[in-house]
Length: 324
Length: 315
Image (cartoon, rainbow over all chains, first blue to last red; front, side):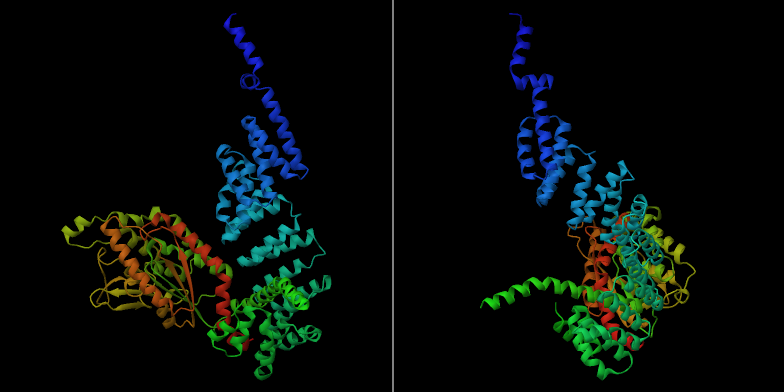
């Protein structure tokens, strides 16, 4: 027997070796398993998907198939809440396929959610380097920068995100406006709130955000007017009390007291009590203010300390009595 | 018994909701009061001073702190600084925006501050028996602050130095700014003392690394101190680095005492950045920003609690 045909015959008979030479049967088996893995994931059966992955890798599939499988596995680990496993897998996969956008993106999202925005930044940047108009990566990067306090840089990415979304996502617009309030960037906060009002006109949050931007500049009367509009859209205790606070800060303690009366009449409301106590204090009626300030202490640890300060308590004593 | 179990279960279940409601109410009151405080001027609110510590390149973290304070609308009426804190404080008090300070950090290479340190050779220094003048640091200070006086600053400022002959702390609040700042950054034993007003002046970090008292003496009712946490945990490899580290350790010990007089302390960990790592200024600044941002609400609350009686009285 001549050696070459004999070798060819042997290769045809031995499936794994044949797969090695021709890449057919084993690859197609792996392809089937990958399809199964994908279908299970899409059907929400992550356990089945992960079970299939073991069989899939036993087939020694080619690189691009492995890459896809890592993606489904990572998403399944995330869905199952196994964040540690998902991180390990994405890190491994990124080592093997450094250009893969999904791994960078998912890992960055996990880091952002887990409170490690500094680790998310380079990954989002990598995604954006490949595709600068990726909305989710722009948003993720904005969030990562904002969480670390780099609000100036975050503003750029938020801005790009909302433009890419054509100012249509009210939730993102609200988030952006809130960060701009935190940055003390009043014009930007007002502008974004205005765009938000176009996207979701019936929501009172836009008036609230604009009112806060005005209050931040000491324009309390205008802020109160906006809160009146917001209250017409959706009455709420929080809005009423914020309005009362702006009346008080704007130097109208009597009107502030009137504004909290409905809350006080409805039952014990520590913050409403606090506002009334502060209003009485500012009017020089400290004796009357005392019981309201004392009742206000239950509004929260900070309010409790403010009440202590107004009641003339020593700082250390207030710290002890207001411990969370 | 069953009633008690139900009561306990209800209390456990409702506790997070109550905490959430409290956090919401606290935030409402804090933000409203803060808006009033941030838009008021003394005497309607207490005056606020910042005391910026020394720390060489690590002291660039103050830039991040200033940015975070700016975002929060934190009022700053007085500035006091020692060494690097004096450099940053002086530029800030002169009215330049914080962005300009970042630009100095980014351009640290161009300014060649590191050369003043890297150019130091201890052996020639010992043989020549003559202290050197930090060429690039002096040039930078003269370029930025030359011709300015404390009186011309947008915010009143103090900076500290030490008279090497007497060990006295010298606090500058008037006269030429560049000389005072130059004196404040002048490392003893390496750089020649600055001769001014019959004194031989060296780095104020040796006697007062966090000038809280100087800020109070300017008129601040409430003082926020910004200090660097000493996290360099390595054996210095040169005589120069040993000297710098000794000064730094001494400064940190002093800082702990001064901090007790501050109303709020922002302490920034700047990792392994050393006092001479001027090419890592921006990194230090970013650490300062992150830390200050993380603690801004705490600082605002501390100031509001202190300010409440006056603030509410003056409504």
